Length: 595
Image (cartoon, rainbow, N blue to C red):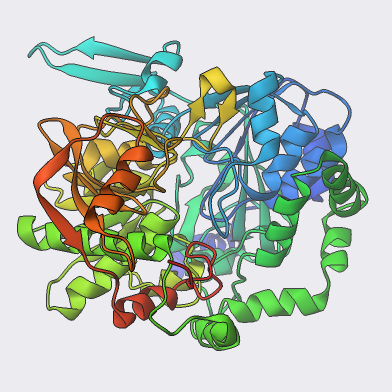
């Protein structure tokens, strides 16, 4: 057919069909033993799946050996606590240290490390952390970052961050590139050569593999053919030359979950194992119980296969079934007997409803087009505002920092990164897009909704630490990025003297763009740079004067009262039900039956 070119064409076709010739497939145990050495800088990647199987194997092999690792990761959450408990780490670099699912909060193990100082804990924001990885991938020494201006992190990280003056006289923050020795990632699939298929959203993305000095150890749900990779090349985020080893590890993100959106014909996703993580959270409160848990689930399992066998087929299929798009229906139905359908409400529920009202009102008044929320009650307030606005004919899009854009949250699970919401997104992307561009660019029309550990009279936020008490909270996460980039920010916080302080001891977020604070007792708004009480919650049996005195007595600064103080009416039954369907188990809202 091709005449004298027949042999050349035949040979080229045979080679192209065969694909890459290298074979990097090996057991996870062998890969960790071969490539991980003491004193290395190891990066635990989020793309978006978490390499939990590799974390477990790393812990097994180095438990009791004091390997003095430097470990960087977007967040030390969930079962990553075992690396702190086993003192495998000399230095930790992250944006969050605590429990995140199903509700955020401090973890005693991280708090002990901070208090006793046996692990150095370095704090960054999600965007600054992700940009440092990008700089490493691009071969840059430094990268511009503005989220740290005015924060305590700016001072703490002086060795890796500096502020320079531009020729025009402006100020630019520069963060040093983050270049680990080895990155560990988990993906859906890879061919034997190491071309890795990942499903969105991508969180920090694959940049950590591209900037790693040695390369990446990749665990995958399945090893596939080169032809499979060709078919799904739009999901390949890590090319083979970056990969040291391909390690089959089905269910390798457990107890975290994985979305198979876009790959449903080939894979079944699985949800986060809520019961498993809640049990681990309880065990962290007692070191003996935690050590027993680690012995049972990590050290007592010879490898990942034994761990999965112990987990059992029933649990595996339950988590796969729970990942279905309509699984929320069963979850809400199961929770109905314990859900309060009546008008009774608690202070958190009123805070969430009022917070949602405030966000929706500001969006309409100022033409905001996007809402980005933090974790916890602030997320529920953002969701409530979203549906309130859309129901009234106002077009707005919800965003979540790991790469969700334009999603409509489904009932049943209030977690901000609920994977069942992935198919409800209008766009799936990554941290740099969401926090760096869609929130942080001059074109942004975003309002933020954030929680906080503490807020002071100027609106400054602390969610990181109280140094004088040697008390660690959780860290910035994306809060400082939102506070630096959004047009304005609303804070939701419990009303108490511990949380409402005259001056925060650690500035996680400067208060410049924080325009309102909603507590469990009232509404505070910025007037001449200071938070002023502009509205009090009208509660049964409590007169205005008594309500104001209660608010003042639990506020850490000399509170000013607005002249036109508003009486804020309680939530309607319709409003309460609209919020409760997203948190049917009361993780954030509580039981919802107390004033």
